[in-house]
Image (cartoon, rainbow, N blue to C red; front, top):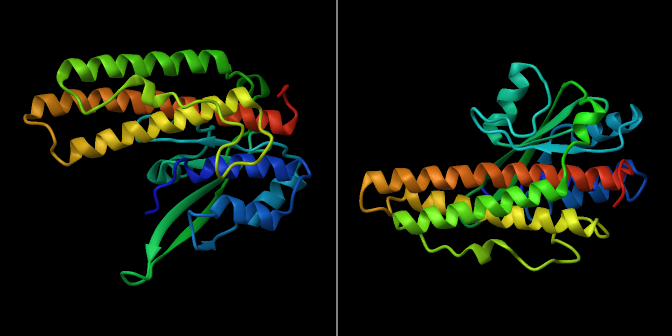
Length: 254
């Protein structure tokens, strides 16, 4: 599968919210969401966004659910939650309900492969406005900083993979590759940080799965630390993206 700096539903949320607000063309949304991620697209991606627009939706949120941890998922039938958990991501319409779940599959012979993004549409319940607007950028930032520091200290104690806390704190950027221009700087920087921390945690888990540790106990402890960090990073990524989507939609100040 293609390795993206950010899950494809982050792009879907922000480009989708921008289009719902009357900016850009839907074909441009399709191109921007899938650029570098997929060579072919299937499923009701455009039709679902049009349906959300017709029903009055103005924002698109995301969720990054994992087994036993439904980060960001709205209330939905079990089959919907299972489908989103299976691929680890979903985009949804917080006001009117409904979700888009992408599956990325590689096809073609070695040396000439493509990636098919197949989107499936599902029904979900709307999210109450006071819950949707609850994320606070300052609180999310503080929790992420604490999680990085804790993981850094724990990994150093158990003899972890090379890690420096500063590596997870990129300098603020005016834009992030793949995302729309003109996004609110504070939540955008938080999104950027969370994406980097998520990538570091996933890389560390990959190292552990390859059997890098000298003993099972050390590997188990390092894996537990990295999974906790991944959980916090993805919760922050969801919160920051949804704050940005609300800003794009005019729900709250930029």
